[in-house]
Length: 362
Image (tube, rainbow, N blue to C red):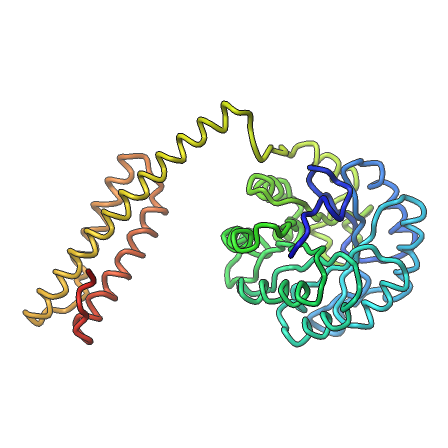
């Protein structure tokens, strides 16, 4: 069981806003940022990094334990809840000792089931909210497994943080958003709150607004954005941090849409959805008919010792179908991807016929 966000945070039906610097650098920096953020009513949690997992040992690895003392002062001065990243049982122990309100587990840690199990064991019997970032690699099962390990030891106050994924070419982003992965996570765990981290997806402050809006439009329940009083001087991730004023401006440009409309809206939406259902049913029937024809072609090729792949025919299909798609105002990229999927399945069916004597499905 996972509790809804508004049952463990006083946010009502509002979007959860988490903000603060990537790293704690000084007491003055933290308090200055927090005081400015506390003036924004929608900001509920102040975030910062105390221990920073760096790829190489010569990077800034965080201020350490003393930063927790600074966060205590932040909380006393502003009333904001506080959250930091933890990666070891020691981190958890120190955070609890210093009254940190929410813990988050970073992408590198989530990618290691041994580390996640160790953290889960350290959290047994402790009632504290845990936010779990997606792993570096686009592996939904790994993300889901980390969430399950925390949930299985009795913690019900859990949120996922979507911070994007490492891919070979993620441009223009630092980490490719791959929105289909958090959407599928939401489908599997509908009660799980998902918070978007536009800062780590973007890696560039100029992309923050578009990513944040996309997250809200996809019904993500919160935003975590890095805010620093002097971003250009930040010791970590300077390019993706923004000033408190720029953050306020960003929030003012976002459209926070409703999940549901009035009765008339819902009735019309239901009618349109019913039409979609009918169209999908027709589409599946057409696909079944197409694959039956593919089967017949495969049998005919086998009987006559003809190769499966026919490049000339494939090129003809691509040209004709894309031309038709353009004529109908459909996305060329979408139709091309769809055709490639159909072609891949067609090749597989014909390969099975050739190599295994596939029996036709009834």
